[in-house]
Image (tube, rainbow, N blue to C red; front, top):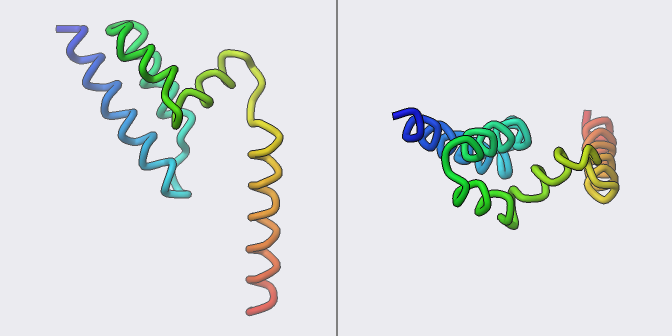
Length: 92
């Protein structure tokens, strides 16, 4: 019963993580980390699929290696942030 509950919770959090990839309001990393913890405790097969996923694997690897956000992601986020700030200042 515990295994089924953990797999269900893991699947729900993978879904939230997927939404976080496309919606700027939801963070992806916390949801994917909870899902990986649930899968690690219940299903090694699903855990390995999540680790090797092209969408979520990087988040888990960065967390495990304590490297945080990659330099490329940081630069992209800052450029997007400043661009939107400048555009909003121009049109305000």
